[in-house]
Image (tube, rainbow, N blue to C red; front, side, top):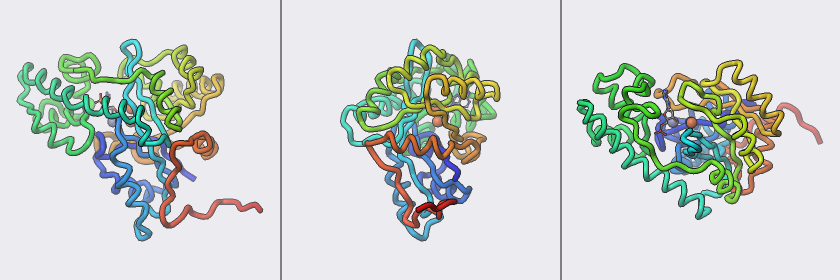
Length: 299
Ligand code: AMP
Ligand code: ZN
Ligand code: FE
Ligand code: FE
């Protein structure tokens, strides 16, 4: 049973619609996929609808509704994966919307800074690329690619453009990760700190911070992720064991905006089972075709 607990759709900065994403997930042999768009649950309804069609490829897939919450602590950006929370719980909903909505003036601010640097980018261009998705730097990066200013998305994240602290970087409203853990827990959800060792994206959190988050109720950390070197994965696996955290593995799939494939990294079924047992805010959504027959039957 292959389980991928971190993906993005056009509801944020992925390039597949939620329906396309779940169909591709099923076609690539996944049994479970979590939809974790940045700061929004807007893609869930479309993904659920695709699973509900018995004729769809996605009919044997199980969907884990989630989100990836943007957080910051002492100037370091963190991403908090949140699973199976009640999407209508008012406090978490309000915070999610605050972060998502602030992405718009923030992206407009980056456009202005780029214009000041002589780049002929416009807000209309970025807004067209983002569509209905919660707007983020990968959309701005794509605009820079269209203009021929950079030749790849990752080049746009260099210090001269929109990487952390770069010339045209503008911060957005972000949550305190301790608040995020508390809010998600209060909404019946489970939290997993995303790619805590992704050093090439910028500064990472210390092990002391991860330990403090664990003491505050964090459930797990992402161990297997494309931005983690093998040595980092080994270190994080050890840290998870030491702190009693669940260690997950995920693709962080973004469609064509990133090179990783769906299911490139996966989560152990026992870890997934523990996530579902801890959650009380929502249930995994089985496809209309039911789950495929288990490998063993007892009783
Ligand atoms: P934002 O949430 O708008 O600040 O954008 C952050 C997103 O940009 C992350 O979720 C990644 O998908 C992407 N990203 C961050 N750093 C890089 C990088 N160095 N190269 C490519 N994509 C990146
Ligand atoms: Zn993203
Ligand atoms: Fe992330
Ligand atoms: Fe992500």
